[in-house]
Amino acid sequence: MSEQELKALRVRIDALDTKVLELISERARCAQEVARVKMASLAEGEVPVFYRPEREAQVLKRVMERNQGPLGNEEMARLFREIMSSCLALEQPLKVAYLGPEGTFTQAAAMKHFGHAVISKPMAAIDEVFREVAAGAVNFGVVPVENSTEGAVNHTLDSFLEHDMVICGEVELRIHHHLLVGENTKTDSISRIYSHAQSLAQCRKWLDAHYPNVERVAVSSNAEAAKRVKGEWNSAAIAGDMAASLYGLTRLAEKIEDRPDNSTRFLMIGNQEVPPTGDDKTSIIVSMSNKPGALHELLVPFHDNGIDLTRIETRPSRSGKWTYVFFIDFVGHHRDPLIKGVLEKISQEAVALKVLGSYPKAVL
Ligand SMILES: O=C(O)C(=O)C[C@]1(C(=O)O)C=C[C@@H](O)C=C1
View 1: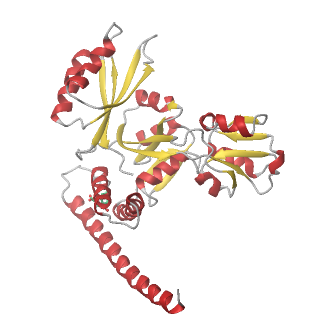
View 2 (view 1 turned 45 degrees about the vertical axis):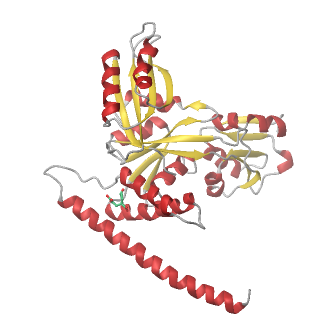
View 3 (view 1 turned 120 degrees about the vertical axis):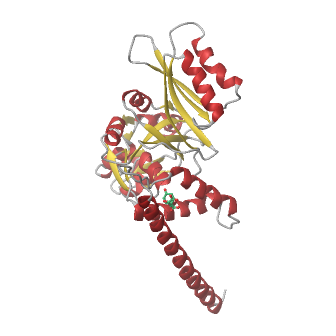
């Protein structure tokens, strides 16, 4: 390519950037107007609801449907995710608590769902995320709920039994683990590998094959593992991209998880009910009386109405020995007439039924 051609293309890019800039600013001014309209239409004593997950899901889906490349749908939606995040910050800066410390996959999930224009607050434990939301110190919380290799995150399920919380969104993250070392690490003398217990389990076969005699040390999070390695010469950490860049570590081996489809699902929790989008999921907790056929009775209404169950999990109820609660996720919104009918039927048989929330299916 000649210098001349390159110069001409850059002139075109500059002109396009000016247009993109103008359009983004116009969009941001529109969002400010939206905020004004939301404030003006409030009834007395009503608090404004700026964040609208159902609308955000619609915007992102529309972008993906209309995108004609060459950028991929996910890439394009990620760009719009950030634009919307900044527009919302003009209306109201959202505060989001997540399972920390900084650099965890939960932080990455929070950024994937809300974008980077939020004020994020790392918490030391899942229960603290719930408490922070319940206390009104933040607008939303982000917690892991299940991993495709390791199963349910029981701390999260149990926290739902203790707190009244509304689920207002979900996000799935592909979890890639790397073996990370610091600049002082002597890579042929590694005698200890730090990581969270779940991550060590997700990389067990790889570790057996490559570092069979090295001590595996479980610590409170992958980010904590990365932090420790920074100051040591004989250790390595298993953690993801965010922790690697936060602590300036390098990748000795990449994507070492045993299952290439290793993913974790996270939930957004808050106090705000989300209206239907037409492509939603609902999460409920049900306890049944301890008698034969109780689980069957619970599942029949879903089957009879052709409702797609996406997950069922059992946990001890904490209110009596050998009594259980069921966590169930299914497709549909609790305001849909069909779902309403099913929930009514279940509540006739159940000891207790609680709708944790209906929310748009993850778009990204
Ligand atoms: O449509 C709205 O209610 C807006 O506030 C605008 C907007 C956007 O930028 O598109 C911003 C924040 C909301 O969460 C949803 C959408």
